[in-house]
Length: 110
Image (cartoon, rainbow, N blue to C red; front, side, top):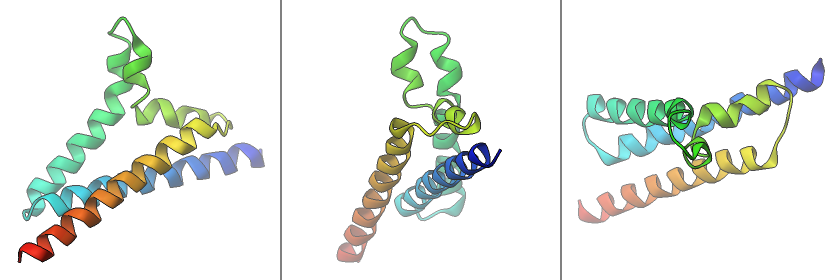
């Protein structure tokens, strides 16, 4: 089905952009490539496994709202939910703006 395919592509694109922004912000925070890759991987895994942590708690909605796995499920089923799109776009923009601020602050200090 073309609709399911297109929603999967959109979900994968948003997911990828957000994780690229996580990597960029981790790279801007440290000078070491190993440290930045570990920070980015840790942040991505925390966001991914927040879905599993939500099943352990008494209020699963609070933790599951941050999970990229929960947000990506709708796209894989062919659903385009505006809250999921907003989550990925706002998170990506926030991380990118934070990266720009950190890089500009480093340039002023150097």
